[in-house]
Amino acid sequence: MTTDAAAHPDTTADKAAFDAAAAEEFAERLFGDYTSAMVTLMIDIGHRTGLFDAAAAGPATSAKLAERAGLTERYVREWLGALTTAGITRYDPLTRTYTLPAEHAACLTGGGATNVAPLSLIVGHLATHIDDVTTAFREGGGVPYEKFRPRFTDVMDGINRGLFDGQLIDGVLPLAGDLPARLASGVRAADIGCGTGRALIVLAEAFPASTFVGYDIAADAIDRARAEAADAGLTNVTFEVCDVAHLPADARFDVVFAFDAIHDQADPEGVLRGVHDALVPGGSFVAVDIKASSHLENNVGNPIAPLIYAVSTMHCMTVSLACGGAGLGTAWGEELARQMFADAGFEVVSVSDVPDDPIDILYHCRRP
Image 1: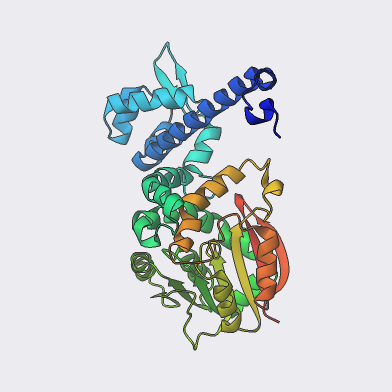
Image 2 (image 1 turned 90 degrees about the horizontal axis):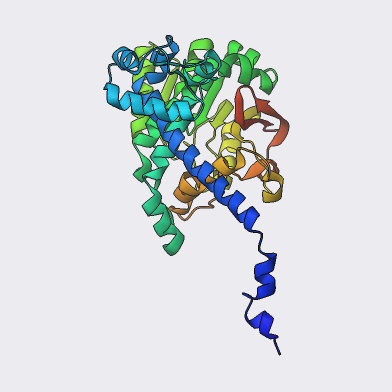
């Protein structure tokens, strides 16, 4: 027989145990989270409109800043109110001027890997799909990748381009042992899930003796990759629309790259087996993917972990489940990654942090 307290947990004793101060502290934290989300949208706008570049040019009134950026002053002034109270810009009430500190400008402007403003774009984009994802919570399945395009193509290009331009040759490739020397001498290389192809274009320019092919399921991304390669006058790189779970039967490569492309596949195990089979013996598989543990308890305390799990919920996991896939998710983690690489027949040579990229790590694998 249950006691009255067990049957009715809302008892005086339970109420006494309730920590009102802790609840208030948690509510304040939630308001902080909501505020940060809205500030992220302001960063998105600043990146898209060039306001950060205009602000980096020097202190200015809202009118002057609007003039520099070619925008409407009233909107710029309100935007500045959000950024100033968020501690991103500083305001002098005597001169009515706003300043973007050099240290902040370094993180919000420029074409290199230190500009993290493009990452803000993913928040606004994924938010537009919240109704479809909520439906999947109730009904199962997922949101197909096609629904996220073409905007997703633009967002990912913006996020990755700075890293590829600033770090791929001198920061990322040296993590894979003698790979730079092999590329310089001439090899056959592929990029699976290449998106707009920026990584291969950078590689093709740096290593003219090698030949490169990029595969991606998104025709709009491949069109952009082909156009950029043509504009650059490159003849050693090509791009093909292809589901990387089904690489061409005659594909043979010395090196295969995958940049954040494994964890959202419908059939990641099949993709890895296909890459293994497409590599010549002794060939290298270089996978840049998410830096996380496969075990939730090990990710608690990682300040980036909420971002990783949320992006997974809103995109990476759901596009896989939409195809009846594995739904690995963005936080598939190093432990599972190592096991899946081994199961596909790879030797994991090394695992390294990626310079100027706190979200990813690099797996250097070899086909024996």
